[in-house]
Length: 79
Image (cartoon, rainbow, N blue to C red; front, side):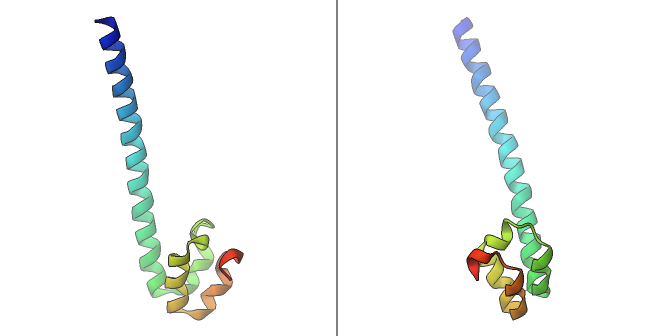
């Protein structure tokens, strides 16, 4: 019985950790959706987005399609 309880506690802890990571992912997805909406309106806003997103080809393309000058703010690896 002690082993079953210990295993159950371990499973519960891992489940809670997974739920926390899913919540973090949900926040990141919503933030990315917000950035996409912003860049569709103002490509030059790429200047102010998270550096990780400046490496994202799809994000940069959205910005550049709205304003070609946005390429200036893309990560060097995409230029």
